[in-house]
Length: 359
View 1 (tube, one colour):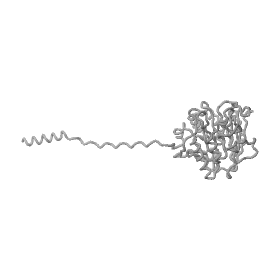
View 2: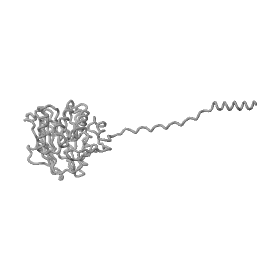
View 3: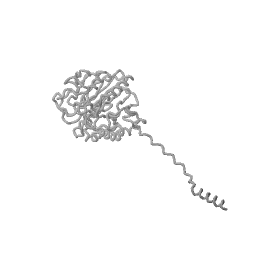
View 4: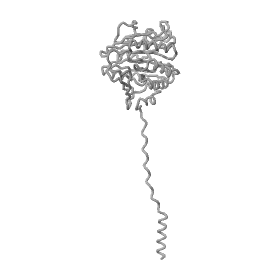
């Protein structure tokens, strides 16, 4: 009996100390995917590069297609293309340094529209200093109201815009008017065998607004790479930049009242190397309304031009109604330009007409 009791007690003790069977732990959830290192869609571009100008080259995972003036455009990233070859001459209406949304400046732009419509311009280019920061949304809205969606509206920064504000304004504007193309982001706009290549901003830190678009030598080198690719395909390139190349004297596109020649030396070298022969510039407003066919001497072309030239560099001046004392001591209260590029398949020729928007 004693043996039975002891065995029973040991049996009870064993039951009391036996550990319950534990359930297997649930597997750990997989780590979240790393954030993308580039914008996947056009809508994501401002998140990545809305305050960075110029941006690095990028390719979207999902290209954006939109229709403007009956043509389909595919935005792939820093490149975009019209889905048809260009036929005939390309006529570009240019508005430089609009700067403000004042009533008289609006009148200037309305006059420019009449002239652009008469000339049947294909695209409208606003090549920097589109507005001071406080008025950038107003100017973007004004451009949309005046020019609508009849043709592409191409815009890029100069030295005056706060980059974040510029991005916000033209993101909003593009939602209303698909005709807007932000050339801060799109650096090579292929119209169908003829390309507009942009160099937004300016190179001199002291003359770029805090938070504005400042380019460096490596950004000019990146433009050189784009131009080399276009040339290798046997296609034509036109460069649009806010600031002009460095010139040699007081007759140059970059001559100022008091500081001599202040243009960009890297840009001058690029042009002198012959990779691109047609250039549209501004920034030095007192030298507006000038044109040359020589990137080294900047020898002035007689105006109005009687015939097109194979090389053409222009300073388009300012479309603002604010009075500017020009180098010839006259006052300008608004100008614009019409650049016609022809013989595109043969390497291109170009001619400019300057418009005085106020007498």
